[in-house]
Image (cartoon, rainbow, N blue to C red; front, side, top):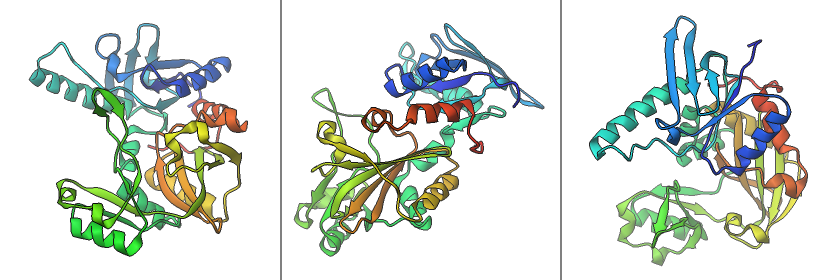
Length: 321
């Protein structure tokens, strides 16, 4: 692509990470078209045709129009999703489906576009069992893990491999008395497991006797490793108690990181590791849409610039679809 056009940014209105990246791109003179799928059809429209050259046409917001045949890259972050509140339930379900497969299909098929990340690849990588299986195949060290709906299996796993943590397999919106909450990661004992486990699938994982955590953020060719120290089981529950330090990965980890991303055809990933008392890194998960911008002011790492490099296509990272 010699005559590169804009960067498309797909996210919701309240996304400070994206704000920083867009400011950096604007400072470089790179055109950006930002939108949220929730803007459709009120303030977002699309007019696309399929030709022998692929997708052609335009995507239009109140302030920008993007030529779909010239999109430089697409930064897929955290869109709010399609909604048609003015329609009855049945008609709205039909409209959401058409928008998802229509607009979503077009955005997933842009010629010459670099995706960060491709939305279909994000979907593949968000399945935790898949991620753990691939991590093992890529050479990462993994805690013992059970995924089950059987109470006896869960109790036997806890007895054999305790201490054991319960972790949600996914984290959809969860409200208690109208307040948004998160399902906490916590230690469980065998006598806490009852027949209600059979109601759905659960993930149980051996607890690592850790001295700290590491967040590794990969942006194309750039790899940033930050150790996070605290006295917390899950450091994401209280950012005020965290301490940060830039570290180097152990031997073999860089190769495993890239092998993991190559498997899922991702160019960005936010990896979490637990570090045990021997200094060994234990793979916990990789979020293909993870947060990272709060680490730059804590460490001085040039992460915003690295993401802008990737979207501007200044890196040598291969386009992945």
